[in-house]
Image 1 (tube, rainbow, N blue to C red):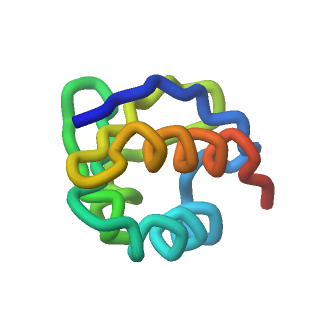
Image 2: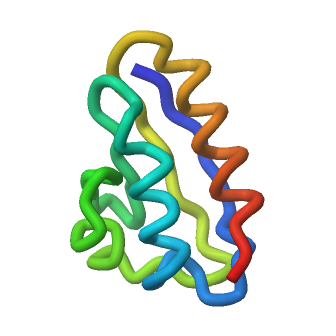
Amino acid sequence: MAERKVTVVNETGLHARPAAALVQFVKNIPGDVELIKDGKVANAKSIFNVMSLGISKGMDIIVRVTGDNDEAHVDEIVEFISGLSD
């Protein structure tokens, strides 16, 4: 299991289009991919779960990956989130 904290810099946070892009990005990553905000854990492969966290610009979230190559995958996801724009 690997975890990293990332600050969401996208203007609209992880709502609608950016959340959908994230779900598409992580769906082929083997194992579990979770986002954690304020202790609430969501499956990052589910658009409904991601949007239920209500992640806005400037919020810190934790990305957790469990599975093969978890360190490499968590780094890829953090980089993707950091580069999201509308």
